[in-house]
Length: 259
Image 1 (tube, rainbow, N blue to C red):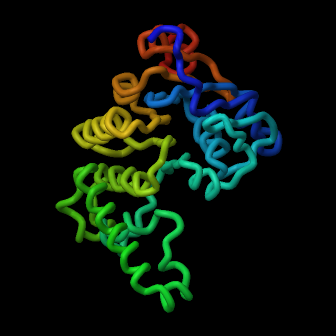
Image 2 (cartoon, helix red, strand yellow; image 1 turned 135 degrees about the horizontal axis):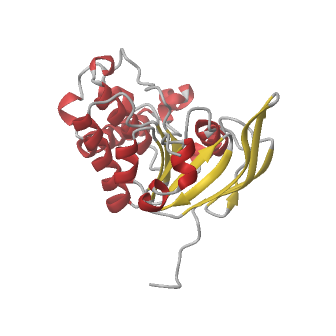
């Protein structure tokens, strides 16, 4: 298979995002290969989440280019990148607390017929058929993420780790080709962290999804991701395997407190 490397699913070229005089993302260029789990680490304020916000369309970049599956996407909205199969989670879980786990999963899919009042009136059978299909798909996703037994539980009652799994499940309802996971393991127990990591591996290996993961938990990222990209002060500082990154003097100095 040597010499037949796949084209990157995501290419970021000299992307910049400024907030006043702050250079949150300052000329970052990265490639993410398909069906990989790439990590993104760096100290607080390094620009990691801002980079995700720009890639996903939550922010518009101040310069540079972004390509997803070879198509330029910088300037598209979050909704537009979502429809193209590039989905993301956020640092804080966004579950609808007073809806059940199952109901939370049935919200994200785009193009739901029931959202159109005229179709609800004039095409009730079609609407009901799609709702049945969505429910079946949601049950399948719940089984995948290990929350099927909690389908009727209010989402607000879930543990931190279960909320992270639910967040992943909501993304999966959109059939993404790539997911941007922002602090997906933050604030959860070590056992729940392992559950999240196992699910991400399963999604990549069995469904062919590409994962790009921000994390502060070094054990989690080092065990899960390869390659790992390091940012500092808005710039890309280093990139490589977990072994290469963890032994890089620049990384030790700015991120791990070495030097």
